[in-house]
Length: 346
Image (tube, rainbow, N blue to C red; front, side, top):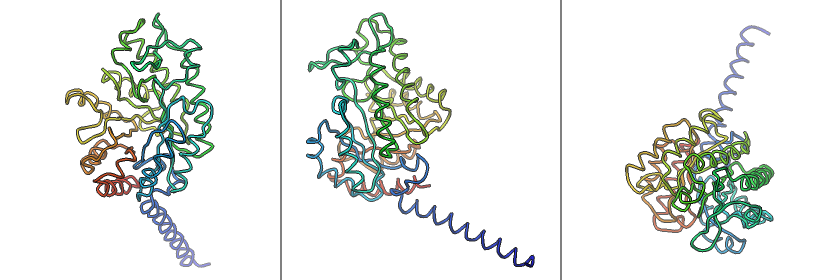
């Protein structure tokens, strides 16, 4: 074979390789919701529709809103928030949520709530607690002597292990873990906790760092785990400290673990009571850490402004309540979801 022919064949192979790579990139750009074969970030990046349910019946009552949300073009996935009590015996509620997602060819993720949703067996085994105004027991992070709540830790670790196995079996890319919490999955550093016997900031922080380590140890290259850094404060010092701990454990920009701000609105990210606190929380975003954001309420917002905040924060994903997809402004929301998906595809 002549040198000229060999050169032509090499050039042809190079041209076809360029075309192939361009085609793959174009397909992920045009169909971001179908990019299941890429990295874990490819399967997480974009907008998720979020709802909460404690029973199959409650989830089915929201089916109309869920279906409307999941038909939105360029949506990344469906996130189901559930109380620990609701999935303590089996995961049938999660299976129904996953079925909704699969029906619309989008990803699925699980969001756990502990706090007042913690099963009674955890307290029977000796977990310290305080009593919620409505009568529920809420786990405390420490015992009266200040030592960490190892009973809760043991139950929590077993639950995350079970959830992680289910997620991997069902090809779920993102598991949202929970702190001790109270109402939601977020951090609880309110007065009820700070007034409890055994409290010190060091004891509270260390107990949460131990949960953070359990969550980090649950993550892997095929399953990212998230914990929120917002909640009932004061929390700004702790939020930065937890972000630093993630960096120490995993290094910069490691997609095995995400932190999240659950106060996303046109006013900011954290739902803080004033601008000074919001700015203090924003120190987290200066860390080279993977991040997501959750809408503060199931309402209609100034969506262009909201998504501009996402882009400025370099957030990988966001969560929007399914109800927002049915309200006025849903057309603007759909446009921003598409724009965010196209940017995420790059």
